[in-house]
Image 1 (cartoon, rainbow, N blue to C red):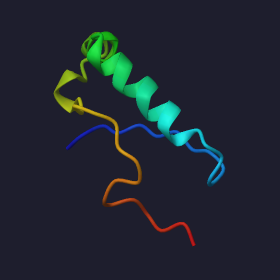
Image 2 (tube, rainbow, N blue to C red):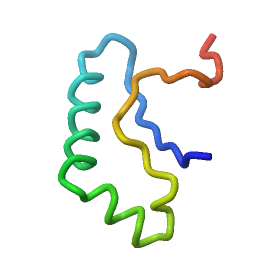
Image 3 (cartoon, rainbow, N blue to C red):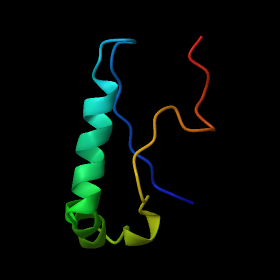
Image 4 (cartoon, rainbow, N blue to C red):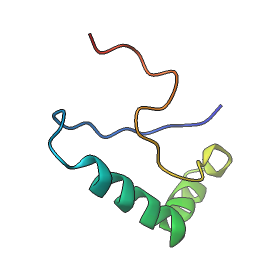
Length: 60
């Protein structure tokens, strides 16, 4: 099981790509992994960000 985090924005506001890039940057530079390790959650790490991944509850 993965410990997932989320960020929400108003639909079609143009922030999706910027948020994904920011998350991917902290994954790539190791910050994400260090934080997870600090709190004993390194086994729950994801490899990249995702936008509306499968399994999200409906929004309607």
